Image 1 (cartoon, protein in one colour):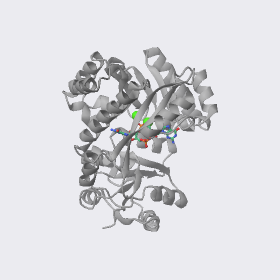
Image 2 (cartoon, rainbow, N blue to C red):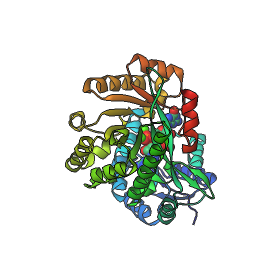
Image 3 (cartoon, rainbow, N blue to C red):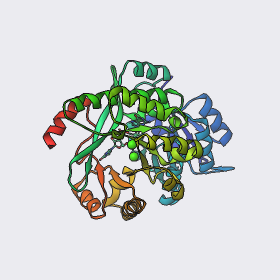
Image 4 (cartoon, helix red, strand yellow):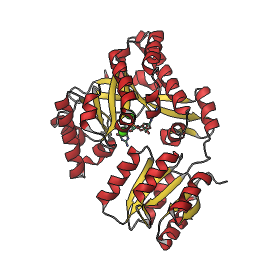
Length: 380
Ligand code: C2E
Ligand code: CA
Ligand code: CA
C-alpha cells in the first residue's frame, strides 16, 4: 500500500475532488470522506498519513472533528482549510496543536493549488515508518540528539543548548522529528526515545565537561512522560550516574502537556525543581493554558514559539504577541527565550524588548554532537 495516504473531508464534493487530484499529483493515494461517520471509519481503518479538514461540515464542525481525531491519536499530519477568515483558521490550527495533533498547515480558501502541492510534497514519506522500525532504531542508537546553541541576547555568548532528536537512517539519510515523534507519541515509544536522548546527552555533556566545555542543555519532554511519578528520581539517578549536576539539565514541556493532568504534573514538576532540574514552558502561545495555573507551576523559563518569532518583521500581530509575552515573562520572573531567530533585525527588536535568550538559524542550526566543540571554540 502507498505509505502516502491523503484523507480529505470537505462537504463541497467539487473542491474535495480538486484536492484529491492535487494529492494524486503529489504522489498520494487519496480518499474523500463525505460525512463525519465515514471520516472516522477511514481514520481508523485506512490510517491516512495526512488529513485535510474543512472547518465547516454539515452536521458537525471542523473543531469537533479535530477533537475526535485527538482522541484517536492517529499518527497522521493535519492540514486545515477553510473559507473562514484567516484568524479563525489560525485559531483552529493552534487549538488542534493544543489537542496534540501534528498540524502542518492552515490554509484559507480558495486554497492555491501550487501551495497545497508544495506542502504535500514536503511531507511525502519515502516509506512509511512503523513502530517496529522506530523501536529498532532507538535500540540501535540511530536516534541521535543534535545540539542547537542557545545564546544570551545581551552578550551573544552561548549559554546552553537544546537537544533535538534526529534519526540517522541507514537508507533514507537524516530524518527530522516530524517524521517520527508523532509516531512515537502515539504509543509508548516516546518514553524509550526520551530516556535514550536524556541518557546519551548526559554522557555527552560529561565527556565535554571533562575537557572543560560545560554546556548546560535542555531536552524536550512529551506529555506522556509527565504521568510517570518516578520521573524525578529516575532523572536524578541518571544525572548522578554520569556525574552531572541536575542544575545543568532543563526539561522543555509544552504548556498543554503541563495542563493535561494538572495534579499529577504539578506533583512531578515540583519535585523536579526541588531536585534542581530546570523547567521551561515550550511553544508558549501555541497551546492554551490559564496563566494563573502556569504561574503556580515552578517554571523558570518561557520559550516563545518560532511561529510568532519568525514572522515578526512582517506581521504586526506576531510582533505584538512576542513583545507582550516577553513583558509577561519578566513580570512573572521567568527567563524569556525566543526560538526561530533568523535575522539581525529580529534580534535587535528582541534586545529592545528585554528578551533574555535566543536560538535560531541566525547563529546556528542544531549541530551533530561531533561538530559542537568546534562551534564553541570558534565563538569563544
Ligand atoms: P521545538 O521544541 O519547538 O524545537 C524547536 C524547533 O525549531 C526545532 O525543530 C529547531 O530546529 C527549530 N528551529 C530553531 N531555530 C529555528 C530557526 O531560526 N528557523 C527555523 N525555521 N527553525 C528553527 P526540529 O528539530 O525539527 O524539532 C521539531 C519539534 O520536534 C520540536 O519542536 C519538538 O517539539 C520535537 N522534538 C524534537 N526532539 C524531540 C525529543 O527528543 N523529544 C520530544 N518529545 N520531542 C522532540
Ligand atoms: Ca523545545
Ligand atoms: Ca517551538
